[in-house]
Picture 1 (cartoon, rainbow, N blue to C red):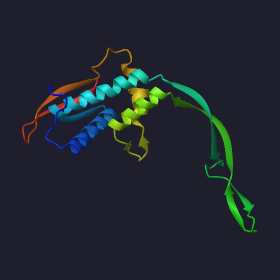
Picture 2: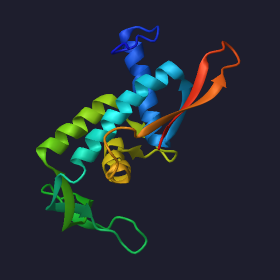
Picture 3: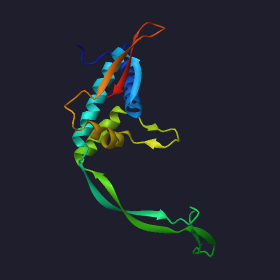
Picture 4: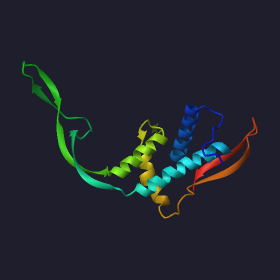
Length: 175
């Protein structure tokens, strides 16, 4: 068996295609593609999930000072009238300082997050907000598979030949 299938593409196009398929699989839970592409993506996604399982609890909670604009009852920023050195008046946003507890990745988890970001694309949801896929892997997918034996996090289900060219189409899904 080949260690790395070429899939009839140049390296940069092939890597981009595998990145897109991996991102879609983690984002949506399943993807429809050809059999050979699915086998390549399966290996990538299984390794990402194994990495997420290994590092899922490797963080510490820290208190962080956060400076935010103070909001009124309607949700608008509060402002105050201030005089500058040269005598001109302007509106200044009132700020408030609070402390929040946040997760801080330990070095090995940070390295794992960076490895994941190399294999996945940045995506936005339907409302246009960025989705943090490494966090989704750590917080949603890894706990689901934590008690499972090594490997086997994805499944390939055959869907039959494609109408146009007769290629074997499969559905790759997270178990």
